Image (cartoon, rainbow, N blue to C red; front, side, top):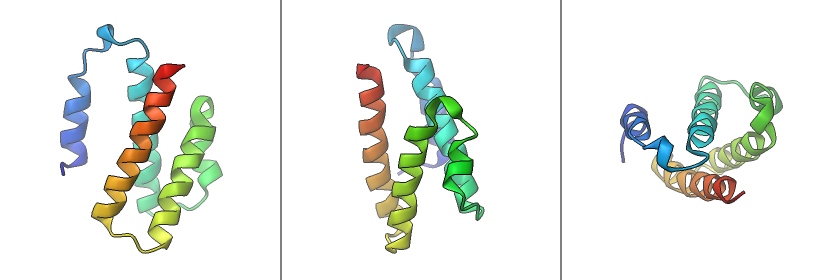
Length: 98
């Protein structure tokens, strides 16, 4: 598993001109990352966090809710990352299919 910095570096290498919606996908991932980091710092208002990104607020809110539920259940960081990444991947793929 890589660090956030390593994942960002990989994201930057995505040839966005070859994939319609890739820029939006990256913007969404960045917004979600910022919200998750805010949660790590102790922010708990999911509506407020998601509301920072009105164009994707509903999707971000849903993913933040999943992250909070997993944390409340005591899922370890590595398991949380795997489960959350899979859910995020599925949601991003759904966005691309639109």
